[in-house]
Image (cartoon, rainbow, N blue to C red):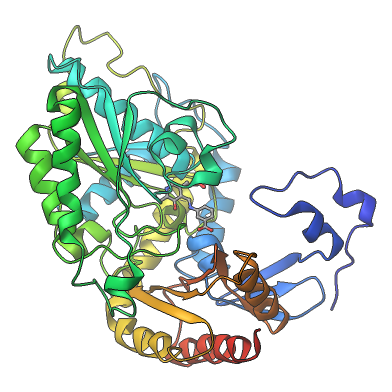
Length: 441
Ligand code: PXG
């Protein structure tokens, strides 16, 4: 069955996010239904979802349990104010999330997106130091090629030039670590690259330059997703952690993509064995069903705020929709599905087969690197001379034409399928990509 596309004029009213609007509207790709591992396109085709929507639908699409939980909640109580009031599901979900960390995280602050989680974590970090009598610690350290959403905080600590250059001076008092990617030193590494741990030492250089007494926090993605799936070199995150400890700097892991089972543990910090002070999450928290984000805080951070008169607000921050009842219902049902189907560790079981199928693409024309960890992977293509991004963009369109939804950024194709994927479907994804790359000029 096909669903009609709105007439061309009707496409004009929507300003699409992070989209080539004119190209899209000239040849629209609309999705009209989703079930399990597949979307249905407006022209009635089944499309295999190799990116979990946009790195978020970790349990697959249309999960009845989640859908029904949201339906029940909206009928029972549509909304409850989160300031000076509460509702039971928000407390329950916070407790379920800290339990997933086995006590490594003590409290949860709810937001509505990854961008808001990042802003929240940065603000908590700065306020935390102030409350401890170290109010000069306001500087934030991000990383080149980092993606932390699109708020002014997130683009300031982020390191993707197109996301920054249009928007003025951004936050001041920000500096950046070098990114960890080097084709010459780590191309085709399976899992964590052996090269690159020394790049963490650049944080010592920034401490020497600015002085630790001015630095509040360092924020990095354990795996940089949006910028093309950059896997942390062995030992790199450990060194960042040690340098932060040495200088009293908070370490924030942005796990908006890596959270909720993507790497074979509830959070990547558990898989990688390095515990940050704050963890920003979103996406897989509700299986993408209802917008929601969450910031997880290590024990001691919340306690630092619990001073002053008991009737005084301790943190002047929050959102109208923090802990929205529908989002909490979706989150609780999502965690139930993850637990019942062991999805938060399933990426570990599939990682080897996924990596083998992915790395089998080595040798195809223009493939200059392949990277993977857990159920996330990427194929980097050589850019066409004078037309960076064009090759991956064409590959994306051709994959979609053949019934496969992938993601591209720059000249890198990224894969992060729902964790419910079968081994046969892993084969299907990479057979499709192989066919496309084999023919791509
Ligand atoms: N941090 C990280 C690490 C992310 O990956 C955000 C923050 C922002 O989340 P929100 O919910 O505000 O979008 C993200 C989002 C891509 C892509 O193509 C990635 C994201 C969003 C859209 C596209 O790689 N990640």
